[in-house]
Length: 205
Figure 1: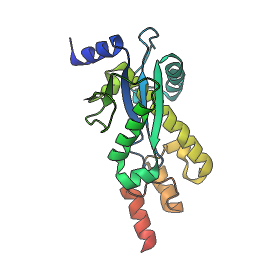
Figure 2: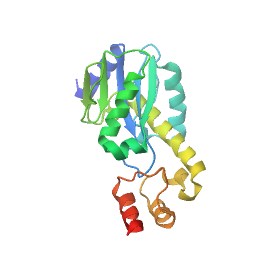
Figure 3: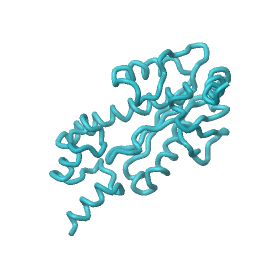
Figure 4: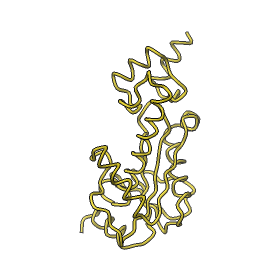
């Protein structure tokens, strides 16, 4: 059995195993979002996959199914202020811990996408590189985190329409950088991130 198959089998057969993933570590603006999901083996969800490989419409449909069929799920975040204070890695670990703590059922194990495990979890945990494409529960968590972050970008667009957050989702695209240079950073921008920090330094010089 391949390692990925072993992870999948364990996740499917053992109740109360949580998958945990994040969305939004790379963008220049907005919170980082995380989710933790305990799937129900008796209510399987077809089509779960790494959220980055799915269309936006497919992610939204699956997010509804996950919330309806999972044994437990929780979406959490770390704010822009926490990102700037702690750094993005530690803010992501904080948000992952919040997602696990917010589950209505305490998992017997947490499977974390990536190569790091948040400190202070209430259960044993294992990090799985590219887990969002190997473990259904992590795929489900990636979908909830991604759709929550996309919804937040819609809110940011309503607050700051001049930045076009609905188009670039906060990533450092050509469009976003043009708007940043034109309008300067807004309160939603991560001031500790180099492109934003450089603009602030130029403004202050």
